[in-house]
Amino acid sequence: ATDSTEFEKSIRIPFQKDGFDDKISYRVINAANYGVPQIRQRFICIGVKKNLPDFEFPEETHSENGTEGKRKWVTCGEVIGDIDYDLPEDKDRLAGSKHKHLLPLVPPGDNYLFFTEKRGYPTPLFKWRSRYWSFLLKLSPQKPSWTIQASFSNNMGPFHWKNRFLRIQEIQRIQTFPDDYIFLGNF
Image 1 (cartoon, helix red, strand yellow):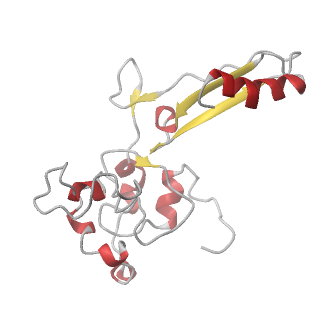
Image 2: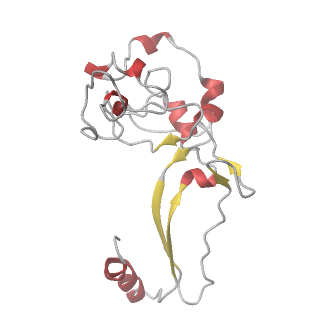
């Protein structure tokens, strides 16, 4: 919801009709503030039936700099560093498609905006905000990941800081699935 009127119309009134009355808690949370190695902001809304105790969001356990008694955000390097090895097939699966020659030039933690006039690139290749955010987006081992998207594209990151696609096991860890979790289906 973009404002309180929209929230009332789309969430609070339907919840009240279902017996939740005014026991609705909502907030935008960042998964990184709860120890997930992803900067992933999501709107969370929880309704509680009137005969049950109120819901309270859990306290955040992490912060970007580890201030106020909280731990520092968990980084990609921390969660995938021990499985960060080179495989022969990595050479055959180049990330970036027709822009694969640019990906090695993108600093870890940056994206295509590195090649814009606004960022001071001497011969700009892209206009500012002319592409989607994850275009040539490269992880930094010193930071959490951005949201891992469900769709796939040769140009869409985040990519590994070694200029390759992320492997399933790396994505699994970044999304905090246990190593022994078994995914079913086609990838």
